[in-house]
Image (cartoon, rainbow, N blue to C red; front, side, top):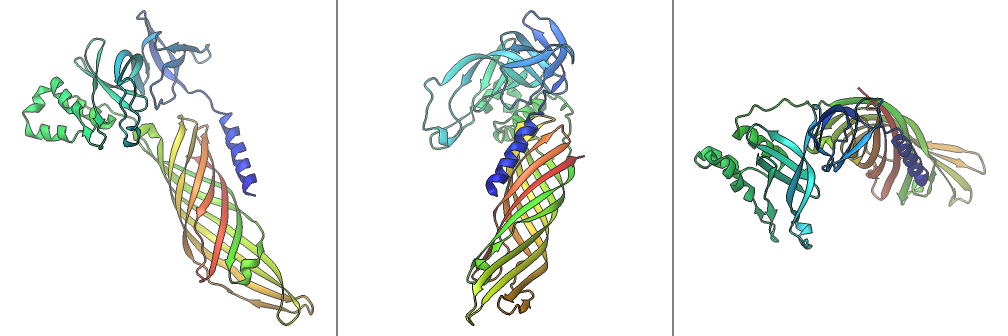
Length: 406
């Protein structure tokens, strides 16, 4: 069943990816000749700086690819600006686990597209992202100076970029409050961008607010129960439980890393209905059929952490984990014994004790397509609901869901 479940999820996710479309948004390019052309750029919310872009002059026009050698700059209106620049890159790693391998060349020179973080008439701040973040300052035409940052073999930070900034903003040397701010400045996009706005007295540009996205949907829960322990239920084979799922939730999207990280609180309701059977030889000399009827209504409150590893405005593919608090109401928990010789039936209600509230951890993967629809699948990694000493209840729970995002 598990293999079939994984196959189905993989097939459905692959099918969704076939619907992935380009995301052409209004923008402009400046050719190497200086000619400015308005049109539409295939905006991919690049996590790393692109080396080429796709552009067309009209929605129905032919797509043309432009490399870094062919255009001076490009802008996706209201989103990003990139400029062509000849830069010198520091190639030293900035993660402790990477320090064992030192590159042959500590610096490399190449022509790239830099993303603009700040620009006024006097100075600009830019970022180039490959295996790490490189920040550049430009106060002269076609000259880009990297702000230097590194770590030693012992993990100590070298924040040389702070002294470099004083070369451009010498007034920050004298004010004690400014000095303290500079000492706390981190080598990251939000800190450096904020510093340039503050240091130049520039009003922060209004940015598009990221709003939470609410969703609701339905699906199916497929579950197989395995009991183990010194009880007759530990010897039973339980039938697979299949039931509908109703759920609602909200996605809180991070502003950092271009919305790649998502926190997802969610509320779900579904039934888990298990029926187990075991035929045993009774000590009295006859065969006995023992049945366990376990039916539970299950409410789950979960908190998930997700990462969009394929991240476009209308299509996303994500994976992550979720922690669930499960609240179960047991509609039946009965043992029925049938003497196969005489046909006599006895019944014990509430045979065993099970948790009314229990925790579990799920792995989840899914895809968002056409911006409005979210298909995902989850599988329980750990967690159970037995309270009886010597008895373990291991529910394998697989859930497939389809939601509409408001």
